[in-house]
View 1 (spheres, rainbow, N blue to C red):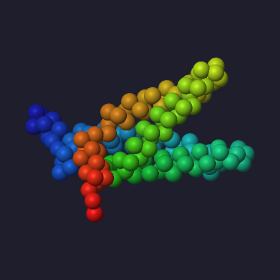
View 2: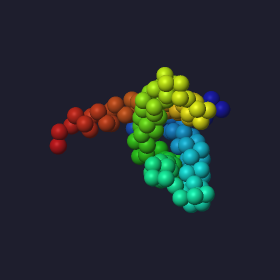
View 3: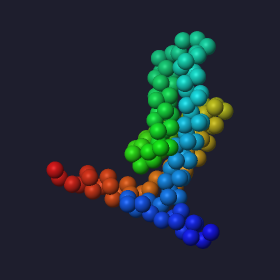
View 4: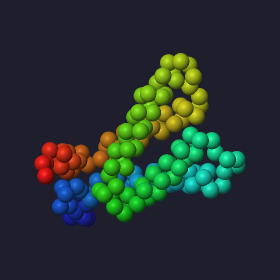
Length: 145
């Protein structure tokens, strides 16, 4: 049993443990399940034609959720999607929700999404293999061709 648990924390050639890869897969799956069905259902079976920005948002979420589904199978290749999730939820929480709160314009839906954003931000920060990110992306940015 001990050797199996140790094997679970062994690192692959990129220096990432199997445990971290499975955490990433779980995050991809959670996002896919939590978003894909609602987004695609809204696009495929709308009660009425979607307004412009509502259509843009649901189109983005449908594409994003579908790509997150691919992340279950290709966790490192789809890592930029987790960055996107971290960025857009942090941006929304800071530049949309907080001004709404300051103006006493918060709705129950906004509060619910804000809580989802905070949870996702924490999960993203915990799941992202930061050493791999800095090693891979920093070196590629600094490398001159």
